[in-house]
Amino acid sequence: MWGKPDLSVYTLDPPKVGEDAFENLNCTLQVPCMGAAIYRIADGWDYFGDNIVEIPPYRLVVESNDDKYGSVQVTTPATCESDIVTVSAVPAPLCHFVCWRDRSGNKLSEANPYVFALTSDLSLIAEFRSDADTVVWYTVDYDPMPEGGRVRVECEGVEVQPGGHLESGSVLSLQAEADAGYRFAAWWDGESAPSREYYLDADLEISATFTPLVSNEGLDKGLCRIWPNPADGRFYVELGRDACLEILSAQGVVVRPAMELDAGCHEVDMSGQAAGLYFLRLTASQESRVFKLLLR
Image 1 (cartoon, one colour):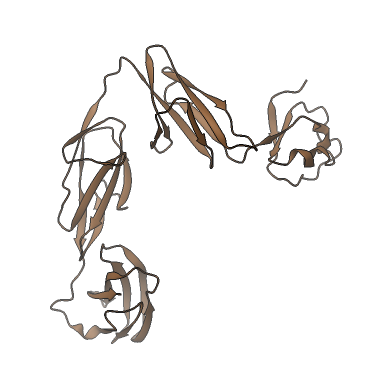
Image 2 (image 1 turned 120 degrees about the vertical axis):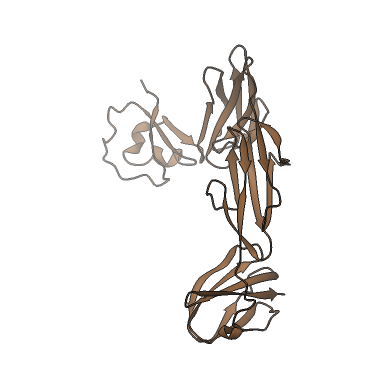
């Protein structure tokens, strides 16, 4: 008697095995789509005969956020012929279904059953709650216009106003944008990515730090000459001494990592960058200067 499927092969080219390699092995063989006919006639693998199952290319894992509150069912699994999947959430008594989320906490759907196309590996979580649970709300506060930039907070595509109240478990999208002459430094918790998500589980006061770019006002401008400016993509930097060049966007994002340049004339190609204002930061002998460059 054949047991549960527990032998899987992930290549359409059957590996070489001995003629009796699977003798007395009671299991079903899982192979990639369009592989069943190949394995049925392959030496050694023909042992499995009709007990070969083709598996879809992507893996779906479905679970409940709490088994006490509800269970999940894959009522229509993906097959090699169709990537359409149906999953159902079944609440326990005195509980209710809220929504489907992915592993990152992103809300995918409130539909139940949920029908969708499985186009990549996916871990799906059904969120249940007890009918007796009291919803917990947290305050989200922030300054949308701190010195040197702007901060935007959204939840499920809707802008969150400073001092707003959101339900525990909400996923916030945070965006920091630097003003011209500044660059984003860090969030209150030390994270340095200007765009990020945050899972709300307590009152939250958001802050972002922006630092000014060093200005060349009042400094000796003999360090270099830049032309043409404005430029159409390519421009030249003439250095009076060895220096390190770094190029940043108007928002303070590094678009060209620091590169060491010898004294002399150098051509720089920025033709792949969008038109707009850029900052060229030159560092030599522990001294930094910033020059503006306009790309047309």
